[in-house]
Image (cartoon, rainbow, N blue to C red; front, side):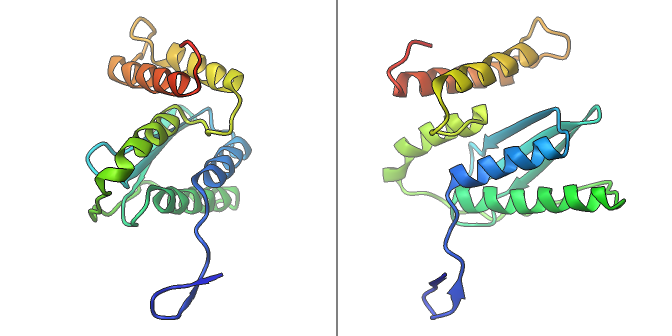
Length: 173
């Protein structure tokens, strides 16, 4: 527990890696076929999580908090509650989001670009290179423009993210 500026107790922030790992585990337990995390290009702290389940895409977006990791944490908590509710017979038809803006300083933009690449690909910085390659190959196949239902824009984003990650690791893409 930490304290805010007013002396109130609050939980210590959770690292983005931890939240992504928990989100991935939760989605596996929920039998989600495909999971994507995408950083908001316009808002440096916003995050979108899309998941493909039972033949349909669902999308959850959050940018209400000051950091990307906090926004991702809120999405994880929300989606995990949906999973638990669905397990108990609750169904839903729509999701809503807020659009509060927050900006990051220029000193964090370089680090944020690499974090965005990991988020776009849906992998963690601590993941081994072999796993990153496997995730990339699966998503690239799914989104390839020659593949039925492919998305060229998403395919290009995945390629750029993969290349940035491999370059940062000193690997050849």
